[in-house]
Image (cartoon, rainbow, N blue to C red):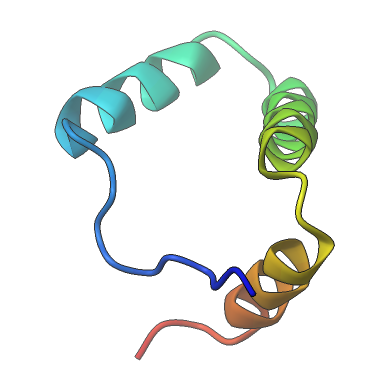
Length: 65
């Protein structure tokens, strides 16, 4: 059974974060929210495992301490 990875798993997290922020530049709040929704769906499709996705949803419903 696969398990949600919660430890840092991005080789260059700062570079990814910068790209993510740049992707939102010049967008309205609605356009930014739509970009986030599309990104979530693309990444969910990439993951493809319903159990992992359910774990991720549950983990994100609780704010980080």
